[in-house]
Image 1 (cartoon, rainbow, N blue to C red):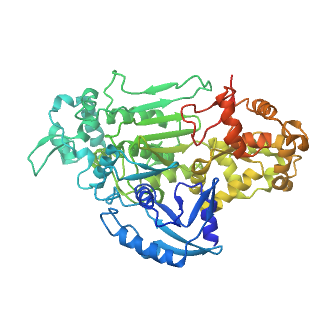
Image 2: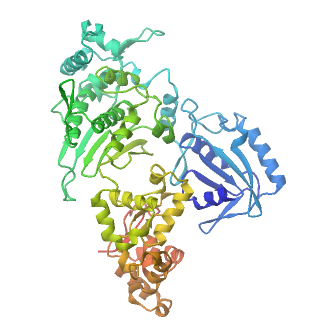
Image 3: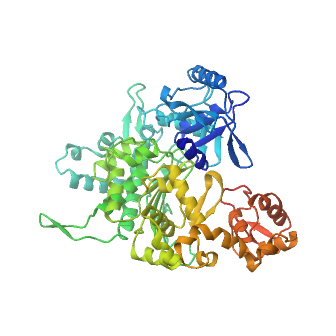
Amino acid sequence: MEQIDRLFEDSESYDIEFKSARNGFPESFWETYSAFANTQGGTIILGVREKKDHFIPDGLSTEQIAKYKKDFWNQVNNRQCISTNLLKNDDVQEVEYKGTNLLLFNVPRADRKQMPVYRTTNPFGNTYKRNHEGDYKCTESEIRRMIADSDDAHPQDARILEGFSMDDIDGESLKQYRQLFATSHPNHPWLLLDDRQLLEKLGGYRTDRQTGQKGFTLAGLLMFGKVAGIQDPACAPAYFPDYRECQSEDPAVRWTDRVYPDGTWEANLFQFYHKVYTKLAAFLPKPFKLEKGIRREDSPTHTALREALVNTLVHCDYTEDANIVVSYTKDRFTFSNPGTLLISQAQYYRGGESVCRNKSLQKMFMQIGRAEKAGSGVDKIIAGWNEARLAHPYVSETSRPDKVVLELPLVSLLSQETLDELKRLFGEALDTLNNNELLTLATCCAEGEISNERLRLMLDLHRSDITRLLQLLCKGGYLISHGSGRGTRYKINQHFFANVTGNVASNVASNVASNVASNVANLPSGKRTRLSPNELQNMILRVCTDYLSLEEIAEQVGKGLRYLKNSIIPEMVARGLLEREYPNVPKHPSQRYRAKR
């Protein structure tokens, strides 16, 4: 029962799906099965219906349970229904919950060689993935990229390009590469080869043994090519590596430095790496360390930064219509590359696994000491950041277009600066918080917002325990939630003392709700219930001087969320009294409103 309670509490998570099955095994089950398998896995629970944004167990009979289990095993092993069976007996659980029977299916993420997992016998039009809004049908290009990623024997960057010659290779880049190669391997026999032979050894030029076709590969052009050749439609037309640096406090300044293919240099991966790493490393303090009488200025943090940059380049999907973006701001480094993770996020953080989309590019960086193959790259990133006592690195995936985003925060979570800011915001109430609560607030303060998914990477807690922790911090007035359901984010309550009577922390959790409700707009609680629609709208306009979520508006004016969501707010938007933060996406999960200016 405790396990199911946790799943119900964690209904906002993108890896939980409830389905009613009173009238038969739900046909939509297989769409969610496909979506979970092609994303990060998840749990499907049969016997639960949704009513007014709440999930209510409606239960299954013993006969239904037996029938659905039989139906499931028959269909999951039928290629006419689903392409791959990923489940074992232990992954299907029959449980009793508060007098009702439920059926749980724990669907793991598929191995990349099993992807795509799809309905029927045709992947096109029948493959699904998962995001915070639910299941969505994959496009043909998304499916083709999954099929390409599943073929480990034919890496993407080994593709032979027709019609390219040494004229498309930047000679200066190849010369500089030779110099670095010689420094790393002074007596290596490849140094005696001519340029084309060296490229062949590195995987930049190859012969297809089956067809006899010869030519430069995608890896060869990406690493050493001229930009015109790289961006040719036959190579990687979407190629556009972009470094952005912003150190200005002025929000109107988009960046203070930028490196991109502007026509003044050959922006291949070799040149981009060296230009950008030099800039990134300049933001880290240089340690002084002697090894055998030689000064070493490389720290574990520098190593982590180098690994992050190389990973961005060698794991990129160069067939995706999106850009490589590396950015620096005062609080973080961010590395974003087109494509998806080839392993689960859990495997990513565990490290020790080497799965690469572009093996020749990886080999090229390895030969000059800039990359790892044994799966230790992620380990070095995490270790370098931990040694510097910086906030934990955070990897995420986005869709449409597919992107992998790695963030390396430059904030010490429990620095004196962060603690001073939390003390200013919450006063003596901070002293009653436990370590997990303090770490949650410190992360939120440092990073601007927090989510259940983010905390799962930092705290040794079950996701439902993290949900409960966030709910308690919201109830205590420390955090304010934004969005709803799977897209919920939490931000620091900057008006803690305005909403809480007194500074006695032990009374915060029990008093904050009643204090806020009875002090809205300085109105007596009795009068609050007799507001006319016009009075209520005027009150909303007074509190919405800046963008607020529906939850924040409901809290400020003391009215029910559903009433505001279904009646008052839509009318005010239609009348031009309120404006949406995302006007073109009315149901955006982070939608907020403010008075029309």
